[in-house]
Length: 314
Length: 254
Image 1 (cartoon, chains in turn cyan, purple):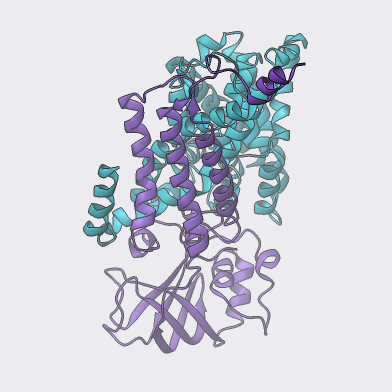
Image 2 (cartoon, each protein chain N blue to C red):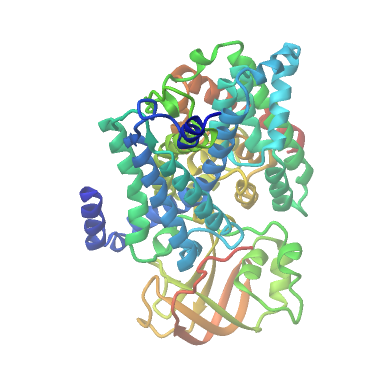
């Protein structure tokens, strides 16, 4: 507590506002965190509800579905979950803990921030009145589903222990209760644990994203727009660096008028699945090879599909 | 049931059965962190500083976040009494402390907005549809910084703006100057955000006929004058330039 007070006094006296880049970085960091944190909390609420109120093994019934249908079913389930990418990670973790095939949980995690109705509606609004409206809206939905399913397929039938790091949000909870606690207590403990676990990675990712945003001149990026291959890669890299919320990124994608529909589509699908803040969250949630496989597979599928759209739509 | 047995049932477990509860450090400290985040969200909401970070379109997440964080903090603190003592590991305590620092930064630092430094690194705002979002620029419509920005990004918009050459405008923004900006000119800049400051783009007009040295970069000013669109650049011939306080909602939202 003393250290926090000393920090408060020191930061007030040092007036970082006098340093332009530091002030800009603090403002961008603050905006990313303030916008994303409530969604992380909503995700943690859903995750805690699943943990406490869904009986163990309930979701194992989904594994009775024919295997080729499990991943598409998980991806389509994302339609019913209108939150952005930060909130879907704790939910996926809990779904896996409750018996859902882990690769299906990851498919759900990747699909939900791209295909949910709020995101699709914001994409429609951002591109309304423009030529590639339906390419962007339909393309985002279809490519979001496809990418999530392919990633799930690549991860295959690996077990939860093979995919996820041990410990996790409840790792610090070592209390032996003797007898079961009331449900409300368990609910709030899981809610807090999930939020505090995901929140730390959000803060880490937002810090890196804020520094990148502060120093990266966007004009450099737009100068690369005319080269088809490069433009897709640039937009994917930009989506990863900017770490925007999936509910707002369509407006930014639409503002990059120099880039074609394929490159903009890559921005819209890649960003909600792989960005700096998510990379930090993935690193804390999944085993190293798994986080790498998610990022690489997503990049390859999105790049390939965006290239195809570029050829078809110009 | 005898009276004694009924009394025991009402009183709860007998002394040896009763569980002595103690505070869980992990739950307690976590609850405090949640509580501090809740305080920050309430502060942003009640002070109006939410608009220094978020757009008018997304500002609703702050009161919602404040309520949810308060519930989460209260619920966790209420669940912090446990049968057996637990101790917070040093590493976990450090992480939780680090999680509080952003709260301190937001609460302690004076209010600030993006300024000239970032303007040089942002792309121009691009309209997705001039007519849908800002109304058509007609012979009588009001010309705002947003409609100017939207007009600058399409041929139709540029033509519509060009027809309004000489119209009176009244813009509020902050002063931006680059190395090649003449002394009697300045760039009036305003950020446009859709969700939060992270997605900021800029809208900018060149103001001419300004007294040299009157304003510094980042000063907020109100410019009145006539607008003269030249292709994709918009020039305002100032009839008056006055310093104004920073608006409560410094960012524009389409």
